[in-house]
Every structure is written in structure tokens, then in C-alpha cells.
Length: 130
Image (cartoon, rainbow, N blue to C red; front, top):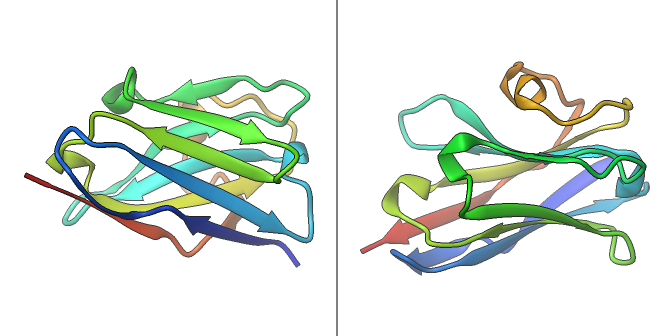
């Protein structure tokens, strides 16, 4: 059974940083493309970043977080991490990770197409306050 669990959310002040982790049980994330999405209050769900399966390793970061967010993979821990820096109030959202076993390269298309990823975690809350 494929399960994704997010952790690392919480409250942080403007300008601060958080590191979100997406862990998996029952399978190796190395074989999957993994993406982070966020749902901000009153707004549509937004794709934040994506990392291709380890065989490729290519990453994609949305323009809205370019230069502040970075995605990476730790194969030994079976975790994909979203490092978020210089956080602002507009980053307040529920962040969730998703994964898919198809062999594709992460692009704007994969993040912007609804329901592109097969598996989804429950999400973790991030609150940025001044």
C-alpha cells in the first residue's frame, strides 16, 4: 500500500525557513516523481516543486517560489524534502506531497495538470506570520 506522510510544517515568522519532508512506506521514492503542492486559503491549489525519478533527478520549481524553495531527495532515508526560505505571509498554506511511478520529467505541465500524480499525502500546515 502506497502511503505518503508529510512532516515539518508549523508556524514561522516572515523571513524564516522551514523544511518539509515527504516520507514513504512500502515503496522506494527513488522510483517515483514526487511533487509538492499547496492550497492557500481561498485560492486554487498550486504546484510548488517537483523532482523526477532518481534516474533523471531533474527538478522543477514554480516561478512563484523560484530562488526561495528547493526540492531534494534523500534516498537513504526515503524522503523528499522541500526547503523553504525567506517565507512570507503568501506562503501560508496546506502543503502536500504527491507521487507517481510513471517515468516522466518534472515540468510546468506536470505541476499544472490537475490530478497528474496518482498518490497524495494528507498535508501539513504552514503558517507564516509577521
